[in-house]
Length: 80
Image (tube, rainbow, N blue to C red; front, top):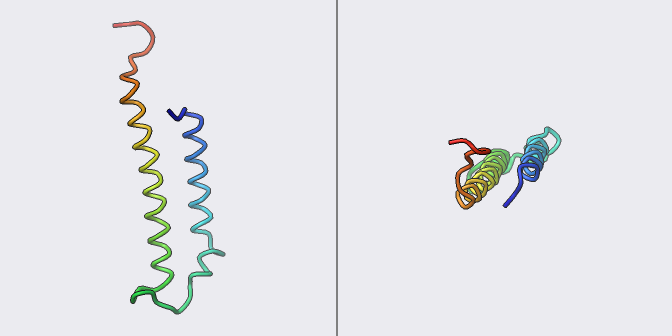
C-alpha cells in the first residue's frame, strides 16, 4: 500500500515530468519539418507525451483505489 506521502511525491514527480516534456526547449527539438506515417513529428510527440502522462496518473489512481478497497471503508475513530 502506498501511503499518502509517497503518492503525493509521485504526483509531484509526474507534474515535474509534464513541465519538462512540454517545455519550449524540448518542444523545439521536435518542431522539425518531418512526418511519421503522415503525422507531423511535433503533433506525434505532443500526443504521445500527453497520453503517457494520462496513463501514469490513471495507474496511480487505480492503485490507490485498489488499496482502499482491500483495507475496507474508513469510518473514522469510534462513532456509529
